[in-house]
Length: 340
Ligand code: AQP
Image (cartoon, rainbow, N blue to C red; front, side):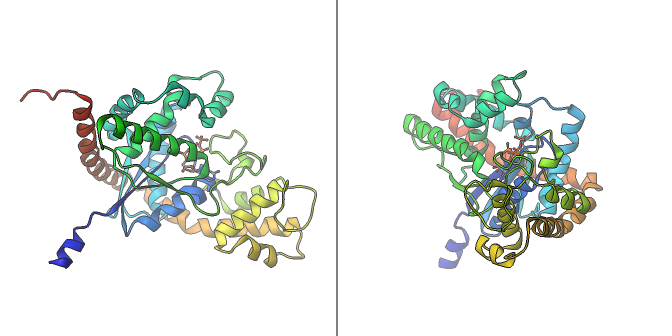
């Protein structure tokens, strides 16, 4: 009896997503995707290709379509089994957009105005400061709250949005009675903010127009090594972390996360070596770590039929869970059902 009861204990829920707004970077990998598979065994996991988010910035339609398949293939190549995880595409589950509207009516203009990503992206895309860019965090809150999520693995750039999602959940629960689980962020101790190789005070972003600033998950070995060799560093020479040494701090962090060693161990390993040797070592290690991911990706992306089966299965599973929360929310807010 006890055993049966234990088996029926509901697993905690993990949710995260990546935008198909460009080719995925080692920032996306080290800060987020790499950590996803660790949850697969013990949690019920939803990992989404968040295509609705990506159109807050103008996308070329054919490229968006292509990158959506690629995003799914990268998830699997990074070790996410579609049987153990719900892997799906956000726009296939219309409840995300619907809940986003309802939550938007429970989110304050002032809260959204404080979001630093909105301010950054408004500066970068001054010709297209659309309403979606402003309400992006509400859609992100809907993504998370729709699945009654416990844990959200994210890079540190998404921390502020996650805090807002928590505030929205608490406000809704207080206004309409307990409806949403209030989610917790999970940020890796190291690698939560991988910096640009060209401007190490800036986050590495897949939409950065400078390709040398970014290492893509699918970059060729030679390109990876070349980019690391050209990484901007200060005028020093010792492989030691320090204030104002953003470039070398970033490279030590990347090496540390890729190798599983602490930053101090990395400093000891490279004591007496110069920046040039270290940059080559980071490039080589990065290429070695990414090689199996790239091989698996090449196999998966060639099989469009299989990717579509995964998409379909994921959409069905996600829709089932999403429908339950959305109908609860609508009931609490006073919406009527279609009379039977
Ligand atoms: N540089 C980074 N270091 C650590 N984590 C990062 N993430 C993104 N960049 C870094 C994490 O990756 C996950 C998916 O991010 P996203 O695609 O939803 O959007 P983003 O955070 O806006 O990522 P990008 O690469 O900067 O995209 P663009 O250029 O389109 O805005 C998130 O968990 C994020 O924290």
